[in-house]
Length: 156
Image 1: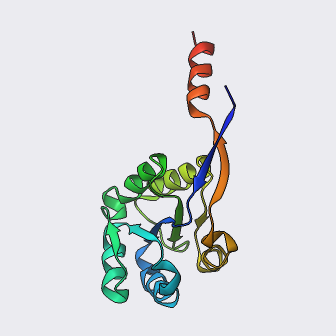
Image 2: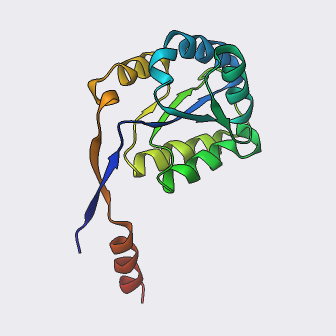
């Protein structure tokens, strides 16, 4: 059994949009500025942010719970399920967030599944204007089934 498997991020991306309170206005402006590109993709986000983006831009954004109420974890679960393959998270590095462990878990799971993760405007701009936005992208991730079987054998 192979150590890695190839996953494909389709041409139409499933993009999660998240922002801390101090960065919501910046993310909304970014969404307005990039609405022509974002409108070609499926969008979701944490509760308040998703609603505010939809209200301000008209873009349909499926909302989950707000971050402090488990929204970051819900999006992490969607990454695991293969239903989110791109994250734009305008985080506020100067304000403490009570749900910081959830944010770290989301970042970690995005790394495990090797998906694009922008945590500021510059990175989001580079990702959104990449040639990969208009095509499929294959990437290799750990073969989790094999990894679990191997761990189960070595722990006996």
